[in-house]
Length: 122
Figure 1 (cartoon, rainbow, N blue to C red):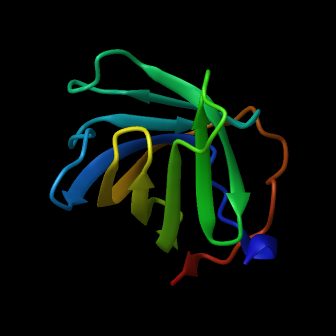
Figure 2: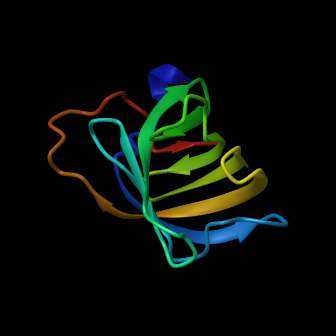
């Protein structure tokens, strides 16, 4: 999987949520930048969140600034160039939910992909 890790750098919009609780709402933005920085912005959040992201197998992991432990662990259930479905374990808010994220925009400053990937991973 890691050799085919999706190229996720860019801005993603929360499109759909399944689960009993989720701090994030449709329309919130998740940003993964080229330098492995992670940002969230949304209506339900007290403030914009910031941290770092990385791959661990099929899991996308995020640690917010100031935390020593993982804040979000998301299993990538489905990925395509313009959307992905994540089964999320949110340690920051003690929640579990599934998100469908839709790509809002790519970051063009990246000169080459971090890893190659097929058009669709399921």
